[in-house]
Image 1 (cartoon, rainbow, N blue to C red):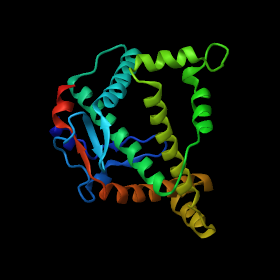
Image 2: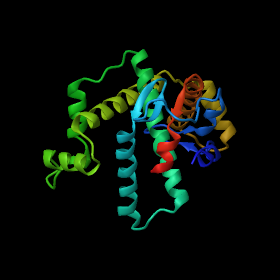
Image 3: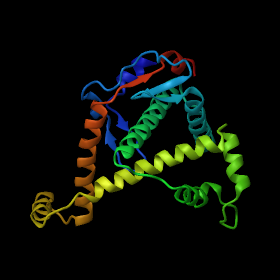
Image 4: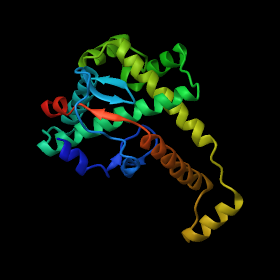
Length: 224
C-alpha cells in the first residue's frame, strides 16, 4: 500500500476548486507514513484526527459512485489509487480548514443550511430540497447528519479561503501585454488571472504542506 502511495506522490493532488500539483509534497517531507498512535484514526493532520469510520464512508461512497457509473469493478491498482486519492482529498480539506481558522473565517448555520438545501443531490423531481433524499443519502454513505454537516462546514471554510486568497491576485496591463505577446495568440485577462492565481495558490499550499505533519495508519489502509 505505502509503496503504491510513494510511487504516485507526483500525481495530481485532488482539490475541490483549484488543482495543485502533488510535487508540492517534496517540500519538507510533509507525509510521514507510519502507524498513527490513535487506533481509530485513519489519518492525522497536524494532530487533528480523521477517523477510520469517516474515511471509510467517503471511500465507499466514491467506490459505489464509480461502480454505478462505470458498471464494472476496479482493478486492485485502481482500488489502491482510490484510497490514495481519498486520503489526498481529506488531507487537503483539513489543511485548508486549519488555515481558514487562522484567517478567522467562519461558516454560519445559515450558510451551511443554504449549501445543503441548494445542493442538486438532495432535490426532488420538482427541484425542491427533499429531507427524505438527504437522509437517504446519509444512510447510503453511513454518515450521521452531524458528521456530514461538519464535513461540509469545513469544506465551505476552505472554499472561502481559496476565494479570499485568489481575490488578492491582480494582473497588470504590462503583464497582460507580455503574456499576450508570448502566447502568440489572443488570451483573455480572465484566463491569465486564473493561471496566475493557480500558480500563486499552488506555491502558498506547497508552503503550508511543507510545514505540516501528516501521518497515515498503514495497517488500516492496507486492510480496506
